[in-house]
Amino acid sequence: MGFSVTILGNSSAKPTPHAHPSSQVVNLNEQYYLVDAGEGVQQQLIRRGINPLRLRAVFISHLHGDHCFGLFPLIATLGLEGKRTPLDIYAPAPMGDILEYHRRYFWDDLPYEVKWHEVRTTEHAIIMQNNTLEVWSIPLRHRVPTAGFLFKEKQPGLNVDKFKIEKYGLSIAQVVAAKRGEDITLESGEVIHNEELTYIPYQARSYAYLSDTAYSAKAAERVHGVDLLYHETTYSIREAKFAKGRGHSTTEEAAKAALKAEAKRLIIGHFSSRYKDHDALCAECREIFPNTDIAAEGMTFNIEEKR
Amino acid sequence: MGFSVTILGNSSAKPTPHAHPSSQVVNLNEQYYLVDAGEGVQQQLIRRGINPLRLRAVFISHLHGDHCFGLFPLIATLGLEGKRTPLDIYAPAPMGDILEYHRRYFWDDLPYEVKWHEVRTTEHAIIMQNNTLEVWSIPLRHRVPTAGFLFKEKQPGLNVDKFKIEKYGLSIAQVVAAKRGEDITLESGEVIHNEELTYIPYQARSYAYLSDTAYSAKAAERVHGVDLLYHETTYSIREAKFAKGRGHSTTEEAAKAALKAEAKRLIIGHFSSRYKDHDALCAECREIFPNTDIAAEGMTFNIEEKR
Image (cartoon, rainbow over all chains, first blue to last red; front, side):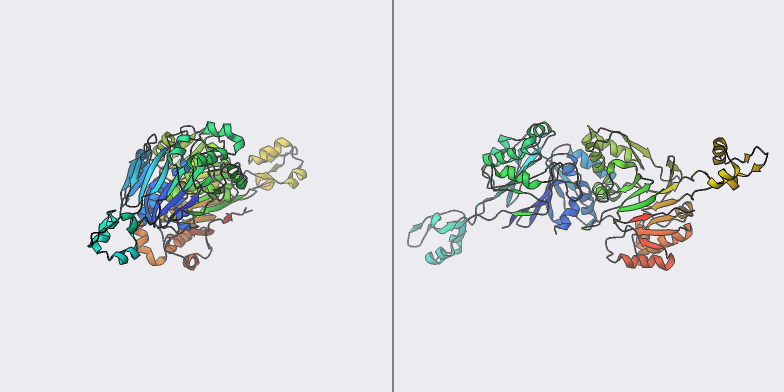
């Protein structure tokens, strides 16, 4: 199964001519999930070849405009595009009120339901799940209530080794039982242990989105072992005091979080518009956490299957 | 004095990868006025080299999202950019309520005042004026209350002919009196008529923005003699019935409006996303009103001084 993250926008609050505010798409097996929705997100989606009608759900980390002002035009367009199924939006309060006044003033004829699910930003909990995915809230430390999100693939079911099916002449019923994790007793009375017959096709993977936030050791612990970690790096290591006052992180703090989480890979962004040289910011992270890259607008990061 | 209109966006409701929704900037002598504010307007401004802090006022024709969803992020950014003077917004009700909701949820720390001035969409009236400009509301025919805008340069004051000052040896007091339109009595008792001494430096110019609207003969009459007319052309002449039902105009109707208004020049846009060939739509207008051009995103239309 494919598991990837596409960066639609990654700039901090102030716009630049060609950089868009925060927004990403998580794609797990062609199921698309939008993470934050800065201004222009609907255009960024179609520029990347992603039909907005394919979005399964939207996750909003916090109610600052640069993380959600693109949501409202997107909702309007989905109506024009003929959406009829509900759109699930996971976001902190008072997103429900904000959606309600948009409904009143702009969407009196919206042909589908917008369903708000409150994300409690002080709780670390499963906020959504389906057959393949769990999404967890991660409490963050910002100026307004903010949650990060951990996208955890569900552990796939057991596969039965084809060669063993042949070797032992297993029936369909026996294969199904082996998939359930059971041992199999052959007609001869021989018991074949499940471990011999089955294997896990791949290890479940995970992606964590931690933005906007000051450094949080607890958040890092909660995403322990994550395969891909996005952590905001609004400021250089040289602006540490400023970062703390604004509820943001430095490059050094993002790298420390990746170390503490024992993340496999770190991607960074949400750079203050004061910085022109993003490679220099990336280099600051690599001093501490070498496997760091810039989550540049337009890039897609694949999380490979692990056997 | 310069008088120009720059097109920031010109697409109708549904977005395309690279076309932005409705927004324009009127520049009269380096005073900038924003007309409608579709999503992405703040980026479109900086892409065109226009510092958003220089906007004197904002005019919103109606409260459909593709004409105003860019206003709210723009207001937030102006705060980050250090704006301290009030921002005047001319828009139909209930824009006041909408701004109030945004203030409550997103702008509790905005460092400047956002002043809403109600535009009554059934009235043809001066809604704003200063030393150089009058802005008139033009009632339009759309699905929600909508006003177009007529930007009328004020008639410049009289200039006194330098050669006549020398010829008659006029004093400063006499020149000032002539500028006021008075006749001048020389020491000899000779009376010099004002028309001999003075001239109008240039004729006042005008720009009209008529979008969104079904054809309105009355609106065309109210912008009679306009130098530059923007009229929406959401549909081809072949979709006339559809246009009427949606409160929009065809190419033919826009051209008829320009004829009726005796406009000097017509620019068109707000094309439905179904049309790929905008030149074909322009050709339909030119059959009726030859001096028509597409108000393409990024173009600037100058209104030359007329002597």
